[in-house]
Image 1: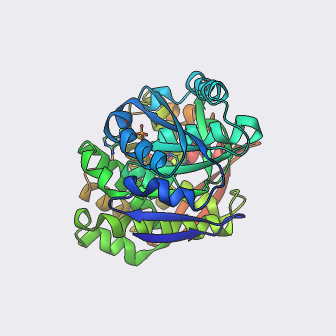
Image 2: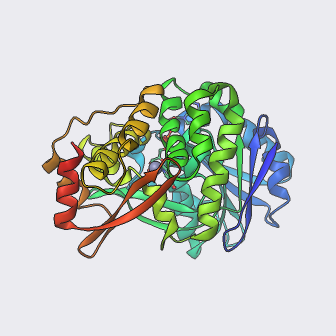
Length: 350
Ligand SMILES: NC(=O)c1ccc[n+]([C@@H]2O[C@H](COP(=O)([O-])OP(=O)(O)OC[C@H]3O[C@@H](n4cnc5c(N)ncnc54)[C@H](O)[C@@H]3O)[C@@H](O)[C@H]2O)c1
Ligand SMILES: [Zn+2]
């Protein structure tokens, strides 16, 4: 097991390694005085891993209640969120009890938000079971649900008490989950670590999953440690996300997050090169990386469609929006655009 500390306002550990589901109870018992928890998961992960986690928690002396919601991004809404809050209340969780979010990014984001909202905030533990959730969403404390107007439009910053990532759980992931998680992994290399990018382009990535997750978490933890609430540096993690979120929205959320972010990074790099924000070669660096991991590089939507979807994005701040551009592989900057600037950026992206 490897452990990385996230130096947020209250620091917390991220444990990464095989066989950790069975150790969840023992690890969590070390950081809480509570005896009661609610495990929140989706119906797919429930069948695979809920029993092992509940058993481990019970053996460590916890009273455990289990709540599962239908798997998929379509569930990331107010109705499912409300169901979680009602479940916590029905099971009489108190301010000192905690939630265990067991699953992918949808579960982590929603159960984290439920923990942030229930009784004005109770503790929660992230137990990511997808490559994407382990490498990105389980760390950093951003929690959210989607609204009809767009993704992640309601949520809270609420840091977990601990993250436990059992990398054995990746074995049951469907084949496209690897590529899906690779998009955010490539993003980390592209914005922050040229050596990591080089390894991803040439090394045995599939054979080094524990290491890849560890490096992802280190990069994200460093950014979050400096800028927990996204006033500055953390915005760099949004590389590819303005247009990526627009693609997700245009698709009615049928395109997975990582796939949309991959295309979003390609589009943003093309626009940034054409408009002179990035040096020549950045588009090719991003596109080659996406191709290596079978991620899509072509966008099926038009510039007006993307622009309309992007202007509903929460990162729109008054009349302006920050987009992230690469200065070189391993270094990125934000550029503030007004709405006309965003329209030109979107047109230059296609
Ligand atoms: N909070 C953040 O900082 C942040 C960052 C990136 C992404 N996100 C969010 O994360 C979400 C995407 O995450 P995701 O791709 O993990 O989605 P997800 O949670 O929907 O998981 C994808 C699918 O895999 C299944 N699954 C999960 N673990 C499994 C396993 N071990 N074996 C077999 N099947 C398994 C799930 O049931 C689901 O059907 C999006 O909603 C996105 O907005 C949040
Ligand atoms: Zn993302």
